[in-house]
Amino acid sequence: MTRDPSIYRLCLVTDRDLARGRALTDVVAAAVQGGVTMVQLREKSATTREFLEEARALKAVLAPHGVPLVINDRVDIALAVDAEGVHVGQKDMPVEQVRALAGSRIIGLSITNADQMRGEDTRLCDYLGVGPLYLQQTKADASTPLGVEGFRALRAMTDRPVMAIGGLKADNCAPVLAAGADGLAVVSGIVSADDPRAASQAFARLFQK
Image (cartoon, rainbow, N blue to C red):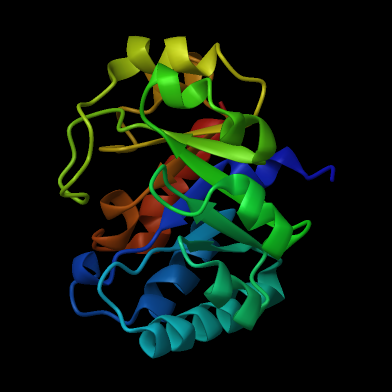
């Protein structure tokens, strides 16, 4: 299925613990106004019902703007709220099985090294989230940072759209875009920002240069 590649430019990856007490729907709504083109709902500690309610709320925020909602890990939640996509990691359901359940929905896959990039899942998904680029504090089990050159080497191994993730700030993204990133997946740089709309605008401006 052919997709508009611009949806991969700026993905907000949510983290309620970093939202500074603000409602996630408010943070996401502001980020979309600032230029976010995709939202990945990531819930590591929520109950299934809480995850479902959050997904429904975000779907209602995003649908009027045509911004796709991607659910992290949980294919069942994605199907329940008719989300546009699912993002899985290396320990989650294999992409082949995700595709069987999710049909033509967007499927993203996390990649941290060359061995994973050579896997069959890479050829079956729609886009890749490659990282962590830089040292970050939002994912406790994150791998060693790739750095720009490590990212460049992995990017050269695939023709899939690639979003860089991990420790991204508006002032350190230019090198990774020059290294071939099609997009940026941002967590704390937007979720924790004083003004999520302005923070998103700062990232979005990188694609206008």
